[in-house]
Amino acid sequence: MVEGQRNRISVIGTGYLGATHAACMADLGFEVLGLDVDQTKIDSLSAGRIPFYEPGLEEVLGRNLANGRLRFTTDYDEVTEFADTHFLCVGTPQRADSNAADLSYVEAAVESLAPRLTRPAVVIGKSTVPVGTAARVAAQFHAIAPAGEAVELGWSPEFLREGFGVEDTLRPNRIVIGTDSERVETVMREISTAQIEQGIPFLVTDLQTAELVKVSANAFLATKISFINAMAEVSEAAGADVMQLAKALSYDDRIGGKFLGPGLGFGGGCLPKDIRAFMARADELGVEPALSFLREVDAINQRRRARTIDIARALIGGGFAGRTIAVLGAAFKPNSDDIRDSPALDVASTIASLGATVTVYDPEALEKAQQAHPELNYAHSMLEAVRDAEVVLMLTEWTEFRDADPEEVAKVVAKRNIVDGRNALDATEWRAHGWTYRALGRP
Ligand code: UDX
Image 1 (cartoon, rainbow, N blue to C red):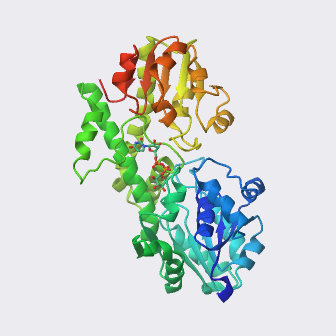
Image 2: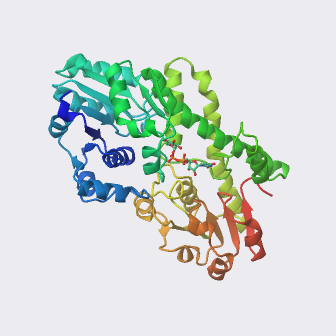
Image 3: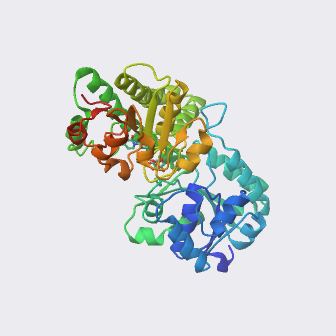
């Protein structure tokens, strides 16, 4: 490693993970060069614009572009000239033809980076990959890079939540580095000095364990959500209230209250595809039964979408054909404009396919929703969306919807029917204003 290069890092792939990582590393004082093969993404980031909604990130980006510590490029030669520490942050979406992870972006990044590594270098993968990928990538670097075995690999999974990306990157709840190289560990400790000084746990593992930490964390979170949603199903059948149940469970600190929110279930770019890729990998490893419970976790999650539609159907007393329906929320969760595997949009488009006119409003995700689902109608405000609706479905719990005044909304709808898909509204208040209020898992 060239001495002057120590403070320099490159970040390859500038999606949610990479753009956030690059900006935050620059904020911590590193000189950062971010690379993406998508010129429009690079143009946007270089101009200080984040191509997605992430609270606080644009400020971090702007100040580090201004102080010169952060730049972006599409040129791999520039990256390998600039730094000897490279973070791999490319996406690993679900494959179109199976449940497995699509590793083509990882492959492409390795094939572009490796032939240009003529000096000793440290490569740290952050992308979520099937266990076993990192060892294979390490072998590829050794085989292809001119510097050979002097290119050393580590894997450090990223646990950031969309909507809290900056906070989770600057103050993660733990840092995990999988590696068998002392140099990688040393470099990672140097890069993580600020966090280690704050007392954030720093764990060194082998490559495989580090890869597993990420997918097992997401599998656990998905299981926890589906657990409470399974209790919601039972509560509905038994006449119990899952919200009271969840509250009572949460006081047991072995269980805890986080990720115990019943409702329409999980979506997004991580949880659904990660549990599916994890099952596919377990199958390849010959331990398919070990993760067969995740199939049930996925199924419970999907059933919540169908159940939400059934509740709406019951409220309007019959089929959807020719009916006017309002959907509040398009993003997979609040404080994000991400619509990947969004439960809200899935429900909206299914109801539209059954013949209803569905109008959707979301504070941030309208543009993306419109591109993906041109069959839906879109409104530019909550009140515009609910006009003449026979039922309103609140499916993403933005503060704007939580705080909605039931009387104001009542003035423009055709019928006072509301489905609270996130158990986020005050049932008593809505009922007091004459609404028929229905929620998942509650009487
Ligand atoms: C998740 C993990 O939390 C994060 O650690 C990992 O790095 C990436 O995947 P994210 O996809 O941003 O992050 O969303 P998260 O906040 O975990 O929510 C996932 C989904 O679960 C959302 O659709 C949310 O609405 C839903 N959810 C969450 C529930 O239905 N109930 C809950 O109690 C919590």
